[in-house]
Length: 257
Picture 1 (spheres, rainbow, N blue to C red):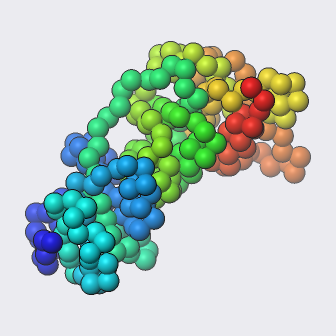
Picture 2 (picture 1 turned 180 degrees about the vertical axis):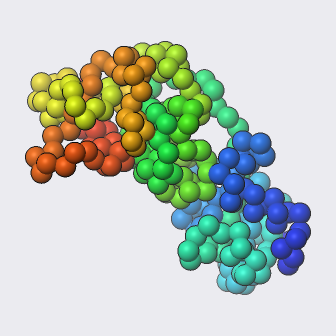
């Protein structure tokens, strides 16, 4: 156990950058994971942290449980940990986990493509849906919120650890997919429920979800086998992208092969 009490300690500054700078993981080769649920979700998926950071109060309660998980188990005052946290109610545990960019697109995998989605909550929610409904791969077009940022990790609720995540892809990468590509559209294409009834949805496919305001880019629209609409009998103009994604991913995942 390694105690640290100063907020100016270089190690504390490094944790703060990882926790509060959304893209720092790319340069550091590490990401910050915070909270009991996420840390246990990572362990359940076989993720081994490089560092474990505990508050003094948690150490006094559960020290033996975490001691020995890695050679670097740090214990800090609760108030110091709160200064690292991005949560309204600070957690008492954090992991530092090694990160490496994945660049190899799996052409035949069930895939979700995120086209410049800006909101970290939307991105994390879609990752959670993708994992829940059996999708294996998520491709994030350049301009999408950083997938391994603390906010996206929290919204994903552990989904990251069951997915192949690739950032900064382009239209060529998406075109390399060997599964049917479907895009969402507010104004054209068949309705989702019509495709379901006709048997034209398949579990193995790639869904593209676009920017919250601009929608899917024209380049990705051109790759689509179908541009799909969701019926909204209540009359709203559009759905939140994460809500639309949940509807579409569930529809495909439960379609007969």
